[in-house]
Image (cartoon, rainbow, N blue to C red; front, side):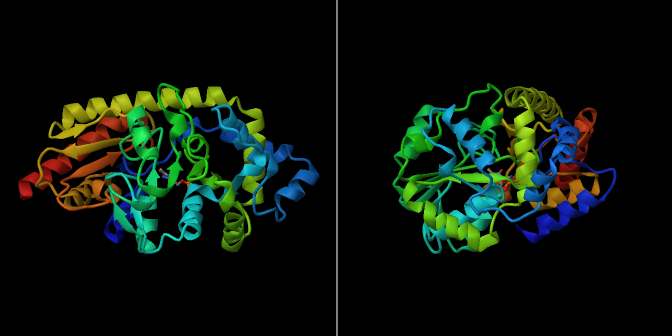
Length: 363
Ligand code: PMP
């Protein structure tokens, strides 16, 4: 991550009174925290001992079975033994970079995509491209980060037909489409070349660090070794807690509730943006909890705007974090309305509009 962005965002996070629109964090009030804490007390002594001991690198069988059930409900023919539990989706991506030998290779990504993946690929000297042949095509189907758009049928076929040896389908937000549709996982159509990645970080707590990979069978042994080499296993305790919560939670209702809360917050944010930031255009997201804005004026500088916003008590994620290629892209902002009380979303946007005015006057 660009150190200047990180410094400003840490500064904003540490200041009380800042209404931050930065970060892709799920809404805390949505999460069944009391049930989670209750489930710790409900663990039997044996379960508690197990939860605090070493486990196997592939992860908890119960959790793997839950992931496989979810994928089977979407038409996939998988069982628990096909799933590798990782320490979040980020580690899944990191293991794939290693196993697929992406150092120095061409990796094809969308022009705007998840910064954690971009940074990871760059740190391994992968050559990022947005079209053409590549060792790997990385996609975020279902709900993209940062635009919140889904993948239409034609685009899906295009991606499957991409001239890449392998595809990484990162479904971090896929269950948060506002229309509730979860499409066929891409690996159903090309099981020998698609690596499917998922996580509980957007639907439950990112702090659990629970993610997973379903890999083509020929890569599974190598991935398991890579997982063992990296950290032996995903944490037993958080896997055990996740299993308890998932056994007691009505998952479908939980997702419905999440979608309806996110769509309402996004609508409120869009309303304020259209009123207060007319120089920005935004595409209405189809899911997730962020909004990507693009400034119509090319001269507004993202970093100067972030500095001014931080001084004026708000923050955002600058577009450059999400761009595979920063050249001449203008000023973009990702805003997430989950970190501020709902009734203060408009005030956060008002502060942002003041920051825009400050930057314009300084030009
Ligand atoms: N993929 C995408 C598209 C994401 O947005 C994120 C988190 N922002 C991740 C992966 C990483 O998720 P995790 O917390 O499971 O490592």
